[in-house]
Amino acid sequence: MPQQKNFITLSRSALYELVWTRPVTELAKEFGISDVALTKRCRALKIPVPPRGHWAKVAAGQTPKRPRLLGFHDPRAKKQARGAAAQRERSHLPGGRPASPSLPSYASISAGEEPVISFAPAPEPKPAKPPLSNAEATLRARIDALDVAPVDTLLHAHPAVLRTAVRLKHLKSSDITWPRGTRSGPILTVNNVSDSQIDRALRVLDTALRACDAMNWRFEAPPPREPPTYRGRGTWGPTPAAPPVIGHLLVDGEPLQLRIDERRRQFDHVPTATEIADRKAGRHVWAPRFDFEPSGELRLHLFDADSSLARKTWKDTKSHPLETQASKILHGLLDRALELKRDREEQHLRDLARREHERLQALQRARRATNAKMIHELERQAGAWDRAQRLRRYLRAAKRVAGADGFLVKADERTVDFLAWAEQYVNQLDPLHPAPRDPDCAHERSFQYGADDRRATEEQLRLSGHAWESALKLLASSSTNDGAQDDD
Image (cartoon, rainbow, N blue to C red; front, side, top):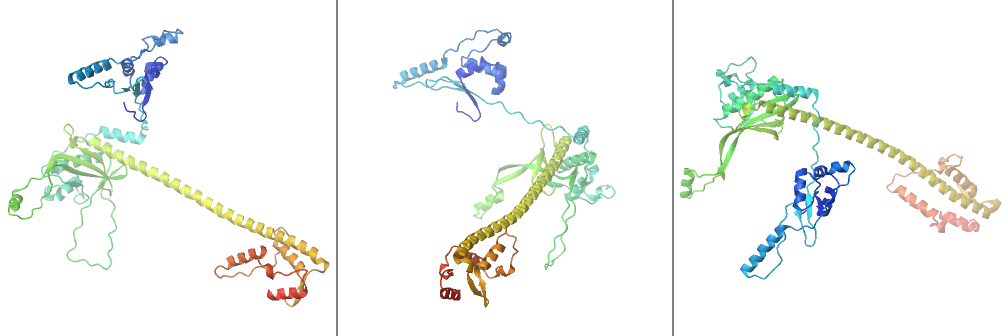
């Protein structure tokens, strides 16, 4: 047998060991079959099973004798081989290998190997339905206790059904005794119902609405919408009549709509006499592919408010027409209303989790921004300290070379000891030195495009010794330094 996904496959000897190690009733539960079915499969493969009372003897401390597993010889193989040989003799065909023995569908065998048996895994238990809340249990008990009898005449139907009948021209408004304030209001949707079934369809709607009234589920008009505004467009001709208002049921506070229609039978189009005459005359005839006829079977559909997707459908059956399914319809309405509440609650929880996730992300971004500022400050301090340390090493070497006289240069028409000025600059540059920052040493910022990049490049070039041609020589002659200074 071809292996299937998640199937338990055992060899004949392995199954023999399991059967004599654990009771058949326990193994059968794991294999997803009954103990009787497991015993039958063992006998089909010539596997001995423990007799009755075997495990009681084992529990009492005894060691019953276990029969050994004999070789497997399928008697059907010999019969099939004899039939194949006889057929070869009758047909005078050259001999060949007989076909493989016929085994049950749950077993397979290969040449030179022992049979293999497969078991479907035990089905996972369905999750238990959560217990009903007190409010839901009360509502369902009220639904089961309802007994809504159909009306004897449609003139005593629910006002919404009467308004729908008048809209469909099935009843005249003058023939109806309207209760006060019920002549106008929302109606229900009746689609594709033949004239012979329209009265029955209205009775079905009346039974459902009166049962909903008994549950205090009101039928009302949806909230009004703001009319669209069309600027710069005029209205030609008479103002069109307002479309009818389709009402909905407030089932436990959730708006739901009911729509009824009649199932139509589809069959191949039968050409009419006019179509046949037109074809004979050579005129073009467009004919539909299918024809439809009413079947007399009504269907009641459940929709969410402002939705075109049917959530549930109740149909006529031979034993239970729609008029007798009021309790089933009410349970379906309650199921959908509770499902909408659960969906809204789950969506609310998802929104809360999303907002909490966004809040945590915002806090993380703020922490990252703060840490980035601190990292930048640390890097600036480390960079300034590294630059100061580098310059200090040079100053110590320069002082050893220049000696006590120092290195005098002209700056702003005055003579300055360059090494003393350089030490002051390095002290205010070093973040670990107490000397205050000198604003005269700060870089003059430029708002030209790429000015900061050019400044960084020039600083790196100077510190890397790239501009060595224009650097002053501490031991050079004064004329050389003056020339170098003029070049700067």
